[in-house]
Amino acid sequence: MYLCPIIRMVQIDSSIFTTENYDDEVIHASHMHDLTHSDLSNGENLSNFSTTTMSTVQKINSDENPKFTHILSHATKVPGLIFLSGQTPVGSDGKVVAGGIKEHTEQCLKNLGNVLIAAGSTWEQVVKVNVYLKNMDDFGSMNEVYEKFLPNPKPARTCIQAAKLPNDVDIEIEAIASA
Image 1 (cartoon, rainbow, N blue to C red):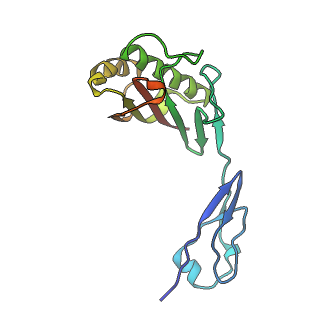
Image 2 (cartoon, helix red, strand yellow):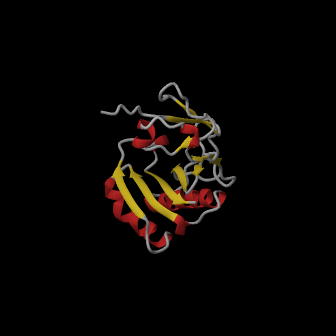
């Protein structure tokens, strides 16, 4: 029977630290090692295994959108993916734009587009969209704008009704794009 500890890698800035060791041999703190069960059980020196250096996480903000840097970034870019924070229907002045669900949907999508540009991406690279509606009765009207705004083929999408959104807006949209 082999006892194989779980090795947890924790990234702080661009360094990676281990939280476990094996046979009193700590894995190098600056690299992540590719380890298999047999690697850990045969007693070989772990420093002989291949390493992969982790890339830095990039925080992105669009100059076109209001900034809330004290609580979030507009997006976070990691190797291969861009996670876009939920955008509400606010203009560059930080105030909710006039109109109803159609105008608000368009503003949310414009705000996401601004963030995609700042991240060096496009709507064609978006792989997943999450839409949060205050009232699911707005689903059809939201879809009219969404369908015209996003290129084909459309990304995967989830749409749910949310009981309460920031500043009591009627819609918030977030997305994930490939980098």
